[in-house]
Length: 131
Image 1 (spheres, rainbow, N blue to C red):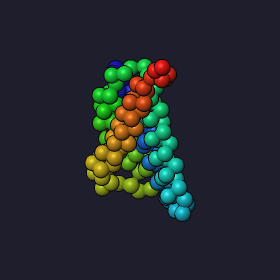
Image 2: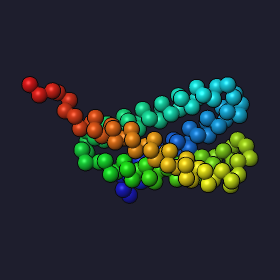
Image 3: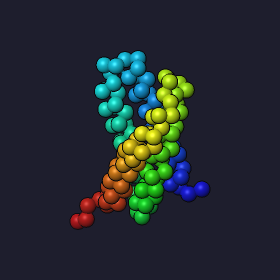
């Protein structure tokens, strides 16, 4: 299986779990929602940036890999997030699936592709400056 499919599946699971965790905090402790969203997004961006940096050092021509990863992970994360919220938290129904598969998927794809591409650029930089 291609490397971008594995990356997409791992990141889609992480994004869906984060989405479900923030929804659980929104239900059980509404004042902590903003902090939970900031921490969750920061963690996901930092993870993708680090993964992209490591990948940029190992394979310099991996930009399209991360683009495909974002495109695949977005809809999968949206679908898994709605399924997890409907089974674990509340009565989230099919009406929220459309939003998750369009706007949510686009946001997730951007949240994966942008930091990863930045990470690959940072990873390509030489570790020792030229003298």
